[in-house]
Image 1 (tube, one colour):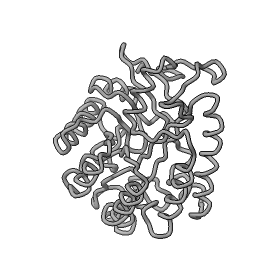
Image 2 (cartoon, helix red, strand yellow):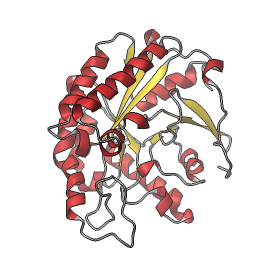
Image 3 (cartoon, rainbow, N blue to C red):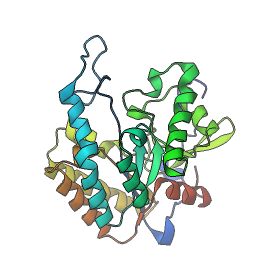
Image 4 (cartoon, rainbow, N blue to C red):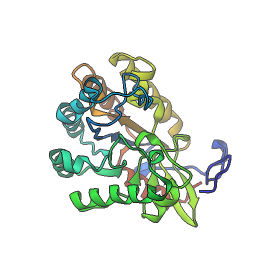
Amino acid sequence: MTPSSYGPFKYVALPDRPKLVWPNGARLALWLAPNIEFFGLDSNVPSKDNERIAPDKAWFPAVRNWAVRDYGNRIGIWRIFEVMEKHGLRGTAPLNSRVCDEHPRIIESAIALKWELMGHNQTNSVRCIDVHADKERDEIRQTLDRIAAATGRRPVGWLGAGTAETWNTVDHLVNENCRYVGDWTNDEQPYVMSVAGKKLVSLPYTSDINDVTCYFNHKMQPDDYEKALKRHFDVLYRDGAKNGRVLGIPIHPFITGTPQRIDAFDNALRYMLSHAGVWCATGSEIVDWYLESGATI
């Protein structure tokens, strides 16, 4: 991507777009993105505001900060699996490929539940912006290859660790045959990027109701988070009657998978699924339908 003041896609105002209709006339495409991540005990682990500490102030091992996140892989993810299976929902999980080596039991369960896995760097401790420019494509390729080896399917979607990109990230993604990316959180519908003559679809990954945003930034309590999910859904569902919308719900097992928070997530899902016209899908299913819909922008 050539450095510029706007991205490699057209600005298309919402009123000027063709009507997007999901399968069976659904108003809303719903996808759930449980981030399955690995942080090394010997790495710079985010602190209580979920941001990494300045390198000159970091200490090792940051046991308290690390243990909070390891809890998600030991306990929280199993609650997420259970709740989503109860509702018949498959995840589209941004996955650090190191999880394949460190916690293969998680991978086994995701496969058994027919979840889709997205590339999410090798570890959440190292983002694309952290590696040398000459090594970024290797970082992406090695992530995708390791997940493919562990699951039998190479991811076609990507979410950067920390949703971080360089000027070269999208070029590397299309060269590695990725079809969609969730880093660009600037819309409620998918849209097409043109990268080196190839298409890359931006799939809405809703930052406003990311559990990190809600609990860490907005300091919400679980009841507030549940209300926020429902209100966000209500507006998208209403607007989707005029032009289809996408609701992506990003969660993290170390946050949403805790005892005090899991029921808020469960209740919000139950509420959403009580409405007709909600299409529950994986990321690639949404992208496939969108590209074939004739309503691309």
